[in-house]
Amino acid sequence: MSKQILILAGDGIGPEIVAAAEKVLTRVNEKFNLGLTWEQGLLGGAAIDAHGEPYPSVTSEQAKKADAILLGAVGGPKWDTIERSIRPERGLLKIRSELNLFANLRPAILYPQLADASSLKPEIVSGLDILIVRELTGGIYFGQPRGIRELENGEKQGYNTDVYSESEIKRIAKVAFELAGLRGGKVCSVDKANVLEVTELWKQTVTALKEEQYSDIQLSHMYVDNAAMQLVRAPKQFDVIVTGNLFGDILSDEAAMLTGSIGMLPSASLDENGKGMYEPCHGSAPDIAGQNKANPLATILSVAMMLRYTFREEAAAKAIEDAVGNVLDQGLRTADIMSEGMKAVGTSEMGDAVVSALV
Ligand code: NAD
Image 1 (spheres, rainbow, N blue to C red):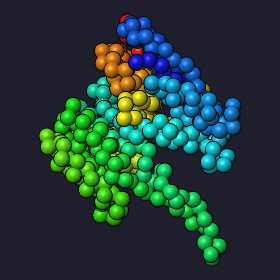
Image 2 (cartoon, rainbow, N blue to C red):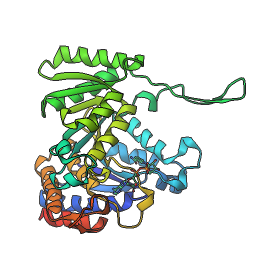
Image 3 (tube, rainbow, N blue to C red):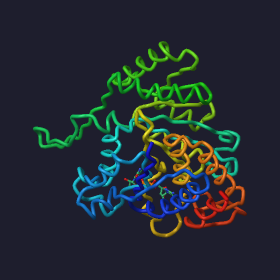
Image 4 (cartoon, protein in one colour):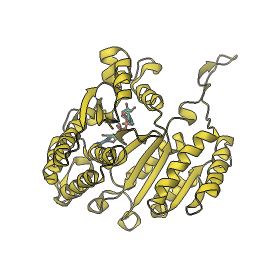
């Protein structure tokens, strides 16, 4: 297998957090003799500025060649008023869908050192380890028809379509069942089957797949409104949560906050063959961009997920995760996870500390 990575720094804090992660990648590549190579590309606002579109063909060619992609984040106020179809976030949707990255894995793990950073009581969140498996290339974010139309009475009406086929539901449920088999053995499928037909089919299909192939996995179902509540009431009841694109988007951000900071959470988006795009769960944080304030750990932990899921380099992945634990043990904190008695550091210092902890 070739070992080619495409790095897309993106916009806002993207270049800063990716620079810190690239230092870690360089060190781990040498240390574990991984033989990885990488090149840089443009996505989002940076690509609009250079090529007039958020996912230009040059980036698409690079992305198709690569085995894995490391992304910072895209978007920002500079591009918020341009025509919707070429906004930065559309570039992100396009690359995910072109590469068929249908399975979005978002772990929400609470590092014991950060138990204080959570807005929930430590006993509710300590030891938290949830994996949210979100369907990423279907559902209401892609469904047609969509748009804003004018009604006969002159009033405007916005509309979108939530749509899932059986095969789309099956392949994401399979990912969730397989991963649950490697963890706690429990899957909770989240839907709104009492109101939406599309999720009634979701529920039936997930249930049928479990009965056919995954008798060893414990499957439960939950409505999305209850899931949102249970995540803050008793989050440790969950092992793997599987859900569609829209519900997964919202629940994974909620789960992120249980851990104290969105700046700590990595994610992977995989195709059927293990090719993946790896990125932090957060956005481009324009409010702190260019100030060396952003937490780079989510991006650094995304590199660990890349080594684990695409390159199958478990020892190197674990070394990065351990190095992150080590810098937290040292008391180093970016502003988003700062607490009393800890040592404040910036983005680049945090990256350097992880590199040093890898030695
Ligand atoms: P955001 O995640 O960028 O920021 C939300 C809050 O979290 C902000 O206060 C920000 O400062 C903070 N934050 C985020 N990442 C942080 C980090 N690493 N360290 C410290 N603090 C951090 O979400 P938003 O404000 O809703 O969106 C900003 C822009 O990002 C928008 O243009 C949006 O479209 C885009 N966005 C991109 C992605 C992506 O690229 N995957 C995802 C979400 C939002």
